[in-house]
Length: 397
Image (cartoon, rainbow, N blue to C red; front, side):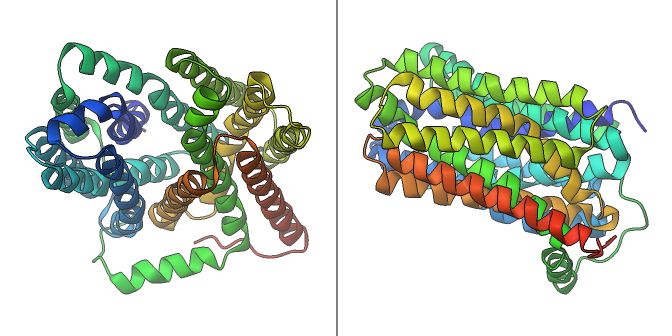
């Protein structure tokens, strides 16, 4: 295996995530510059996420048919083009069009890294690479808004998109030079029928569905937390914006610590056992938050501590679930990765909308939703384990 492949696919993950987070500190300036209500700037994020989610289904099947390299190279160019449209946007319509294009291209940055990892790695090596991809996924939301804030302070909102454009072009050059074709077998003709057939096979597989649901639930509760936490911490608990930023960074650090710990744990323990242990920890955090809410304790630690616990567990659970879900499907790694990513982001969109509708500055709606998500995740894995011990076959794809 080419040694440059793993750092390269980690770079692809960063590229996809930067498009979500880098420009967040510029929302206010963009609303003023484009003379629109802030909700239209927020819509640019929703469009990006939705197009990113749905495009993954297309990229997964396409990369299974044509190969990873032939898909990621044009997708990165499309990403750069969308960034250029946003940079030159003089109105909200152009900005939304550019974000839609960016999001559609960014879907490849989610699917292809996981598919390449499955193509090139087996066993514990695949588990370790999945952890590294998860760490990259976690670090960008921590660091990108900080960088975007400096860009906004010293340059302007357009400069964020210029940076993304330059980064995309650099990624394309690196991929062109260093990324080999990792899909095994000769290229085939892309078929919509084959795409839906692959999805049907995956969705009928009990093992895959169980381990697909778990990371979707973790991503969903994370999106709900990000949607509800600004009002909860700043309005209800009286934190200043910079204090709120430190709390969110601390939460992300717990997720990072969980991932780092997992790099050592997977060397000695089975991934399925780690998932079960992590889910018990996450259930404890979820019901701790619910219990404190029922007792009427609305303090910084009563809200933050349960999320520190669940994010720590997520660092262990998330990557291992991805590994377990993809492992039986070497010939459908693209489609399997696409369904995983699509469900995660769609659940994130749904949960953030629910919190916007139901959360009014108290932790109770958030506590109920977190408890529901972790219960669903726990039941999904118990369902998988029961099916496996009962002798249900795990399709090899």
